[in-house]
Length: 330
Image (cartoon, rainbow, N blue to C red; front, side, top):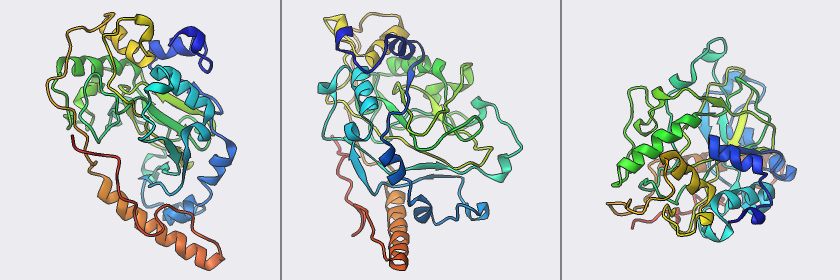
């Protein structure tokens, strides 16, 4: 993709991504979807928004009931995603082509209201993708996408990232062409692939409702503590490429910014001799069974509320969890 083809990212944003591995797209989501996808969140949770004693879980990964195509949901961010990945033709339109109300909720806990914690001590530092074997050139997780559904202020539960940790992930995967399905963990609960205790650069992602933050797929990140207990709602929709990344292109102008960041991190222009040494695999994530149970619970709450108010239930799971069709073994 040439500079002339770029319409959504400024030159400064492109350079920021190459240097730091992330970029924010302000006000990228249509207001109608921000409202529609959060209007029944407390019913689905079964919590009273005005009574924190009912907030029995600190963090909840909610299932999806409604969805719209990504390019409709957040046109500006979709354009930026395409540019970071080298063009819309490289994106797989059959996988994860939509965004929905699978909200990731951080309600905090009283234990952390008056306590502080260093970012590197948060634990659970990781890169996304629990449904495929990770390689240096994997295209399953094209980007890590964070959509803000409400304003997130410092100490309000925003995601933490470690931009200088990208080099650790890149180096680990470069040195392990056999890939990894199960990421080894350090004693603090972080993935060894991130080597988070070596990192010094930590950024707390804050912003306004409708902002979208696009991260390099090898960006280490972790949930933070919501000290303020202001409910925080985000989603994390994946985007997948049709083919693996190409780190040995004939024309250097054909590299995507995601590919170019990997090469620059390694200090090379191309990788002509690097190849994977084990099969690529996709599989059903272990969290699927728990998500199906949550779907059933949420649908029952929605049905009970609809019966009480005379409303209707808008959910793709109205007759039970929709079969998980995306992941295949290969």
